[in-house]
Length: 66
Image 1 (tube, helix red, strand yellow):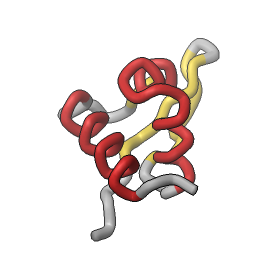
Image 2 (spheres, helix red, strand yellow):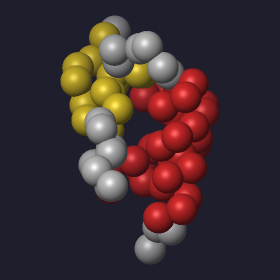
Image 3 (spheres, one colour):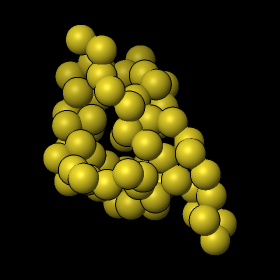
């Protein structure tokens, strides 16, 4: 089970670092918060895939529902 506080921290970390970006490469998210952080964002539907460029997966950060 993933702790909600952890997911909140991961989300805020990515949101702050990627402010102004339209899309974020998967490897950059992993660099910021690790694979566990990316999986947590996916599980809580806080990221969506939006394409692949040169074999690299792109994500958009979704708005968080409080």
